[in-house]
Length: 222
Length: 111
Image (cartoon, rainbow over all chains, first blue to last red; front, top):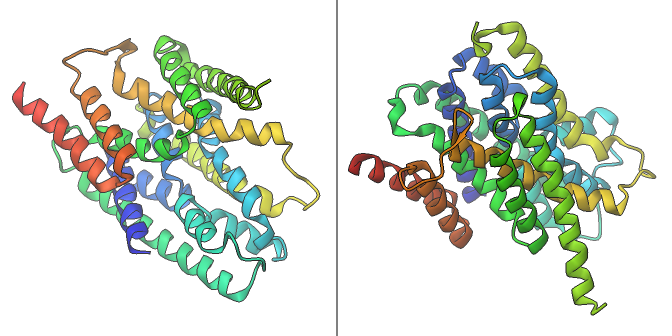
């Protein structure tokens, strides 16, 4: 648990620092961190909010970054489906990256689903995750503004996103998709409303699917 | 007015973002069990977040005011490359941060 708590704390602190460095007032940042509770989505939309991008572009960008949670939910649903609706929504809300990683590592091979031990483990981890995240994030909001801007603390936010990206891009199709997205996002950097990033994601996903199909055909010798 | 200080804009943004967190995270906890993701959709969803993050990181570090700034003098670029290599090798977030910010600071002070 301790290494996870440290990762959550660093990540939360950096998110807080990034929010205040983008020029966001501290009360807005505190409200955002307490409610949105999704670091990578928050970091992703900061540049959009700073230029006053249209809200649908802000929301769609965050949804794309959050799509991985749909897969998390699909793959761990069997442990949760028997709960009352309100508890399922709450469990989902708390099921972030690290909580999910811990839970699935611990119980991946457990034939029984939804046992009391699993509950205790899930909610215990989720509560620690939530508290550590919020404390670190608010600390970042309060302290981040004290550092001079030429220290480059906004770079820290991008480095933190690398820590989310790298584990997702270990296989060949994902690497191809990421390279395409990088190149296209730079080519389209002058497109209005940051629409270039949506174009880059669409193209990256399509090329990744093509790469995956090519890889499969190579393996099967067809 | 600066959008970040526009309370109605920010409150609307935050409300939508919070809804986005809840909807994506609890999606399959709430949907009836008979609803499954089609395999193609699930495969495509696996790639979208990585591409989205790449499309946020690259322009953030490698462009300024809508102009691409890849070049020897882009300290953030070198910091990003060093940090990515360290993280790919060690998967240690703290080490990655220290190296990345260290490279940036060293280049900034040397320049």
